[in-house]
Image (cartoon, rainbow, N blue to C red; front, side):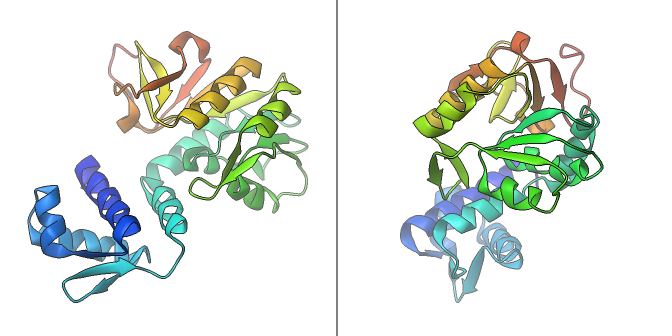
Length: 242
């Protein structure tokens, strides 16, 4: 599968969001692949209840459009994300104050937090908050702000004002990409602006991301490499990174 398959499936879901219905032949032509490949992708997405197959194509599975994209991001690269979540949790100690970025990789840290006592966990994610609700031994701080359904996060002036009042925390940060020259970066301007503020206020910054994010700088920089204290990933990077 690899990245090519993930990119195809994301493109299929994007076309469904725009038009509500797709045809196998047209999508195959747009993506430059065979109809057999498209049907295989549709089978994969249908099994995950992200779409419903029809004669000659597919439609949305009945969920709200944005729910489809949230579900898709959450199901990608799950073994890698769980590995990273377990490794990142080893950097936490009882009584720590931590921030969890809204992405699904940071979300996989949450199950391992159940083993700790008296954490303070700062989140700008409704999804993270709902999972942390099951761990009442911790104090949860929710930033508030403008809610974005497609990301299940909160951004904007209210969220930024909350972060400005906080400090001394360890920030677990995801990003779209990481490179030695460009640092960690993203393509969504509001997300990048909020992440920059979090990095500025954090006492320690831990980047969490799977190996496919390495050496692929995105459009907008969040932080330079020397602003990161720890990098947690699922595969040993090439020697230049070491």
